[in-house]
Length: 631
Image 1 (cartoon, one colour):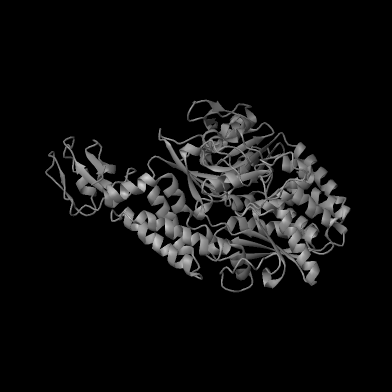
Image 2 (tube, helix red, strand yellow):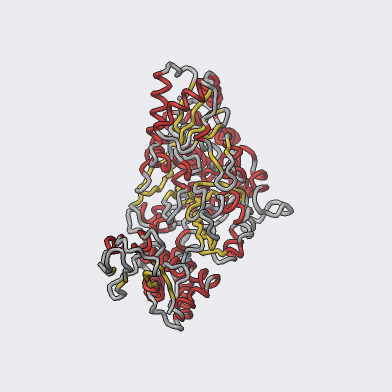
């Protein structure tokens, strides 16, 4: 058990000395993505193989959190060489041990091969996916066992907390967070230090306790940033919360985490247990007079509970519904007490800010260096973690400096769009975000630029779409998602989203009318302007952004009954042409028996029976099924 401020050093030295005894450490990714590809089995098999060969004194196998490059998991990185093995299967375990560890030869077939250049990369640092990343929140990814607090301490963990407790200047901590320019990474971009200052002031003026809360209720489709940070480095989040609690005078904190995150929950619970055992949580932390503890509150999967006031209501045992924003959580949050709410990534950024200094963090990103101190509402300091998914070669978790361009993220880090397709759009900011077209690929990625383009930073989901995407259908998909997730408390969101959904569905079915375009614009603008909370306040963005950048697709759907991406099935017609050999494969697979014809003779489709499912085109081996769209 750590008893004093000094004992962190002894633990750090002990772990480093132990690790130096090994010739190499095999870091096996056991984040959710790799676990789904049997990452746990790979880890255990490597341990068993090393033990069977009597090599356990020379080589250590460590299960890490998410390595980031989800597209090529399971991943094994041999340290300190940095050799990166990808798509490792059970049959590859013996080769890694025999060829690499014993034979000192790299297993070439497991190296990452660039899909464009065809070049193999031996070292992780040479792979383009990692080349433009800059790690702050993810600084320990792939380097520590997330279930071992001493691994975190050996990497400098809790040193920032120790120094701040020793200096005992909580007001200075708040001012330094303002100086860093850190803005909330949960979507709103509110200056973190300004929020802390208001909460601390409210608690002192009213003589009431103040709480700190970590929002891990990440519900955006395609988003997994917060989940991965907790799975990879839970103590970075806890140390951030400890720093915040000391700064504002809190004694109790909570992590509100989604029920759908079982692995993150296991690792968070283990981190809390270990932190208490090491006197990093609880009474008289590190031998000081500071006392603070954290409890877990599990969400039930309601997307709206990611909204701050709905989250507070849910934690308090009430229905997870938002309230008017003139009541601020920093003054009347959890149980109507002053409450500081930040998301997982925001908390994880705090320890390095105090390790390297607020000016260092402010120097990253797009802040104006002439402003001293920087305007907390202007610019975008630091880095941002994104989940990069969709029609992209390199799907995964990336952390890049604010101000990087979309092109650098999508083409350099993400490897571009596969299969020779053209990039069409990228959707950022979750369901309430917007779609950004190819013409804006050189736009900088920061809070203000994304907002100007009709989208938003959000929590960090980034969905890439290729030319085979129908933007009208994309808007319909996100609006339909929000219809299901709206709490229904206010009429603009409740009724407006249903009206948008009905109109978009009608357009995708080929039943759109000319005045639907104005109707969509008016509805979406009204929903945004009149809704009670920010779920509704940004719910019109998918419609407004696609109308702004892809209006011609709406016009084609309405005027010509045409879907250029061949996605909206009611607008498609399938026909069989003379290339048909009469193999009968299409007829056998048609679910409505709409295809008829003799064997070895041209077949025909009964259009009255056809449901435009596309199975005939999928199974045809002779390109004899054509699809056309438009009246």
